Amino acid sequence: MDEALKNIIKTGEMTQDVAQYLFLHGGILILKDFPEGSEFGIDCRSWTVGRKFLGIKMIPPGIHFVYMSVPGAPKIAFFHNFVLKEIVLRKWDKKNEDLFNCVSDDVELERVRSNLMTLDSHLGAYPFTDYQLWASFSSSITSKTLKRLSPTNKLGRISSQVEMTTLEAETEKQLNDPLGLSIVDKEHRGRIRFTDESGLPVMNAKDDDSKIGFTEIPKITLADTCLKKSGIDASDRLEKFIETVGDSKEVLAELQFAFVIFIIGEVYEGFDQWKRIIHLLCSCKSAIEKSPSFFNDLLMVLHYQMKMVPDNFFAETFGNNFLVSTLSLLFANIEDCNAPVPKLKAKSSRFKDLLERRFNKSFTLPDE
Image (cartoon, rainbow, N blue to C red; front, side, top):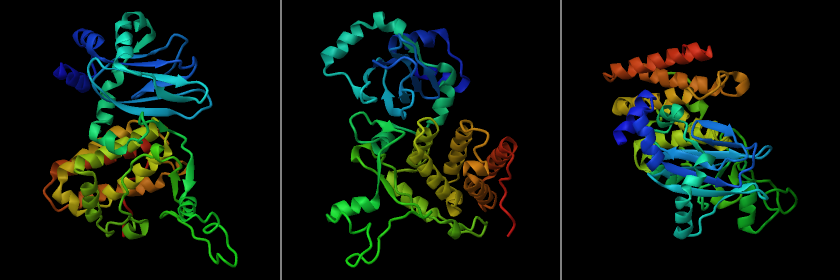
């Protein structure tokens, strides 16, 4: 049956045999007390739910992204690695507009399993028309990725609106000096500020268990690269990143994780991390010669991600002119690579042309 699922990913077509198999063996997500008229989604598809909605059935095994929100409230989401015949139960807390696990023991779980025939008409079928896109969109994400990056709270719950605090406030608390960093007087001659490379305050999640475990990216400034072909080579920084996360596939997995929680989960922190990783990878030169297969995989990841973004994604008003320049640097570095990598260069050229046609932008670096 694994081959049949792979065939769905390849062709996007669901056969009756596979549908019957997943009806009997697919994963099930039951969501109790979720309000009518709210949004519920899994992977690349979401719906406004009706009064009788209780969840999703026929979920294929593997990594999936589940998200939901009631009108006027931020999205709540989590990743889950479904296995065959697994039943996942969650309950919506209407008072706190939050999600929690409603299974207390195996006896309760078996009670739910024995009652599935009654629940079946209240469960929507997994949207297989989008399965091919989702599988390509999340191809590098594994259980290892989820363990490394998901928040440490019990459900790995991710919120699009986490209460934040400045690093200044955190440091004041650690020093037991509530005014020491934020006030200027005779005892405190200068205010200490913590800012990122853009001059913005460094912000962290107020609750430790809601923090996403993103890897700290070795910093590269625009002044370093100059966004010219003569810019610095960040390959050594990429090697450090790979050492930190364990292997090169986890770099792409974190790129996908960050993009998913931003483009679907509306978590802006994901967009920030995605841009940091993109900037790092696009600033590498010698790494292309050393690991052309990695950059071939990177182009594939970016190709599917660009299918998910709106047509104005690279507009200056959208704030992503930086990405135009950064991706232009990637295309230039691949084109200038001295190694015999004709397939990589051809794929890069086709992808560049595709972006220019769709977004009506030039992805060519200015002449020096």
